[in-house]
Length: 170
Image (cartoon, rainbow, N blue to C red):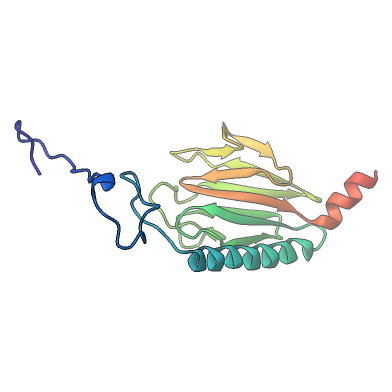
C-alpha cells in the first residue's frame, strides 16, 4: 500500500477491534505474527534435548588430542567438525577440511592448529576476518566453550574432556 507520497508502507491490523473466534485467538495482539501450540513447542524442546544429549555424548567421547567445533549459527547450524589433525583449514574452497559454503567466508579463511592437546585458530588473511569471542584476531589459543566466527558461521569449540581433566589435575 502506498502513502500520499508514493512510498510503500505496511498496514498494521488492530487485533483489539477484531472479535476472536470463540476466544481461540485471545492471546494474540497487534504485535503477534504467528502463534504455535503447546504440542509444537513440546516437540521442539524434545528435539533440542535429543540433539543436546547427542552433542554431549560426542564431546564426552573425544579422544585425547582432539576437539570438536559445533556450528551454532549459519547455513548448516548443528553441524559438527572434528579437529584431530595437526592443521585443519576452514573456508569456502571445496578442498577445505571444513567447507563453509557462504560468500561471507574466504576460500582459505582460517586454520586450526594443534599444539599437543591445545588448539590455536589463525586467520589466513580473510576479507571479513576471524573472531574469537567477538574480537577480531590474527591468532588465538582456543579455550573450551569459546566461540569462533568465520563469516556468518559461529562455531563453538569443545576440547577433549580427557585433556581438560588432565589439565585440571595438574
